[in-house]
Length: 86
Image (tube, rainbow, N blue to C red; front, side, top):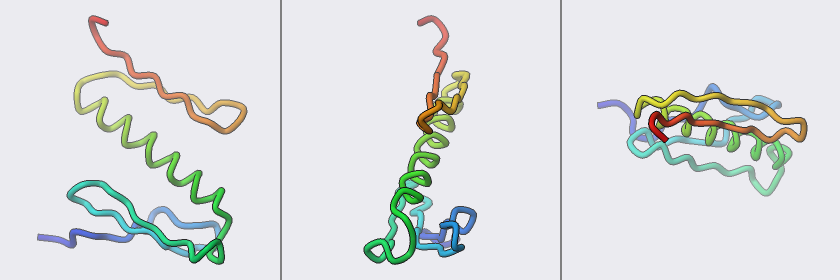
């Protein structure tokens, strides 16, 4: 069995500092930006938004639903999940 908690090495702050880990059993993430000393908290917010979008798309596709994603002008992301028969 592999590590249960792994660094999210593909996702790092612009300065290249990783400060987050993922529990691969639950997909829960944990992080510490050392009270902002490791980067702008807005960058962390962007990471968390991206993670939430990808998780929603993954779960929808697992259930056979089609998914579209659209980035809006304000930077937010609109995810549309098409459920058959609804």
